Amino acid sequence: MDTSVSSQLDSSLKDSMTDEEENYSDASLSPADSAQVSEVAESPAVTVVQLSDGQMVQVQGVIQAPQTSVIQSPQVQTAQIATVAELDDGDSVADTQKRREILSRRPSYRKILNELSSDSPAVPRIEEEKTEDEVPVSSSALTSVPTSIYQTSSGQYIAIAQGRTIQLTSPGVEAPQGAQTVTVSSSATPQPGATILQCAAQSGNSPQQFYIQGGQVLIQAATGDIPAYQLRSPNSGLAQSIVMAASQGSMQSPSSQHAEEITRKREVRLMKNREAARECRRKKKEYVKCLENRVAVLENQNKTLIEELKALKDIYCHKAE
DNA sequence: TCCAGGGGGCGTCAGGGCAT
DNA sequence: ATGCCCTGACGCCCCCTGGA
Image (tube, rainbow, N blue to C red; front, side, top):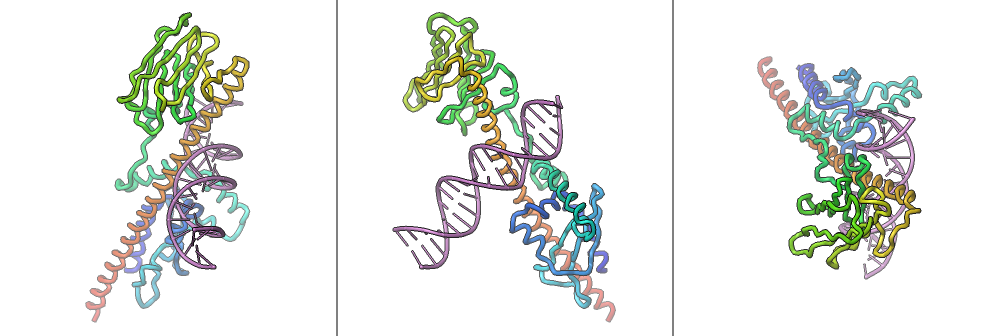
């Protein structure tokens, strides 16, 4: 009787705990999570469970059962899970190395959550990021040499592609509303005079004007609430040598193009890393929430099984009498 | 009201993993 | 080998809360 129930619980745990989760419970769970997992009384009953990848896991005290009664308070009916390597006393140096390897090889939150979701359909999957609405930081745009992306001091992005396309994007605004695209058809060979382009601004705003003057490109705001951008291409056309002045009136000299390129690359890198860190934190929160849900589910499951066991035991005792 | 402490979010850096 | 992505770690800032 006890054996069957504990095996059920073991299999339940085996099904629901991936090795990545163990790594997290070992290293980086939130205090609330670790408290729920590790709050356990010492029990001599240790079950070794083999995970799907072959890793051995010791599950201690799945049911803290004294000899007389199986039923215990729910507080102590949690499982303590530790890898065999950690529990093994001998060869601590090798254990430490192995532990470090396990920790350092931990997959990303997306992978972990996707694996969890493959286990249980209730867990939402984290889809691969769509780059369509990330024009300023899309890798394809960044790796293609002709595209230049700049961020203004107000947070707006200016993307200039070799196709003579200028795109203004405001952060936090969906692409259809936030992006303004202008195709510069006359700039392959810059006109000696100024070519004025107008793009349809957002409703309610005055149109912005783009001046192209003898190889120079100036983007000026027509309204006071939009900061003034100044771009220029000293040699020809709208190639990547276009730079953006930090403020109105501070045009860049060609001699500083190398430093500008370095600065631009750094800005792009920082911007992408900023986004990545934000996304990583979001996924981490989602992952922790997922683990908390899983703890709740497993606790409920445990409770139900114990009640079931109690009922069966009552029936058995009645028949024995 | 002031202030210390904690929590949460953010930006940046560093380093490992991975694809090319 | 290289570049990109992901994430831990660190410092900073802001907000909230409880005590003096």
